Image (cartoon, rainbow, N blue to C red; front, side):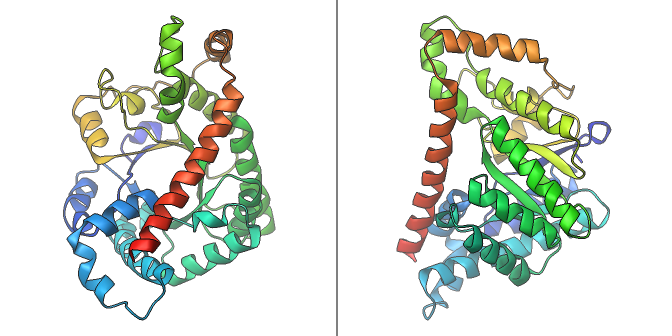
Length: 326
């Protein structure tokens, strides 16, 4: 773990073949990261822009575009899992995540089938199957956990989503042979990018809504006390140059949590970030901030719903771009 006393893990939100053979190994060796995540957008940038994939793709002409994508992605996930395996074996996370086809986000049986198939094909115990937090996704999460498969629940913006994920994990553990490692991925910075312009014009402090929403979800997850279930803070890179690059890691540092971040964000945090616990934040402070948000005329629930829909669409668009280019 990056900070042992806090049981705080730092995972790289990046996968690319050449990187896995070079910088990735060094980040693990230096005890900077102890896990990795991927999503369709990350694989899109890697597969379509890196020359490291050309030879393998050229050898897959007989396959469908989705089969080509899976062959390439599975190769990278296996490689990452193997590099991380010593961490996993000693109980220091060592997980890498792969997401199911985003077009299955409303298809329970399709998500279950693909999640089980990907897990079996990768054949590594330190792989997490990433499932969007939708109504169909919650049912799939329960079934995957019941089968002993670690799950990364993704695209979470609301406390209700997080609680539904945690309860699905708990139900799956009861049906199966006990708890497996699970994370609830709360998206942070996208909330601020959606509303900060309006808040600033109204004189309300900016760059706080994503943090306070995430802190509220963290409080709820910790209160539930689901075995082997942690909050993971995602979308923690900054897009506003007025903020330090490590802002969202530093301000969400919490006991029993994970932060997955882009490589430049990790580098900035390691070199400059404060390593003292920032959460929990009291309900009073959180509620006071969102009362001010409401007074500006912003319906924060509608903001969250739009972010969920936009996030799902972005992953679908990235996945479709990959398939069309393959």
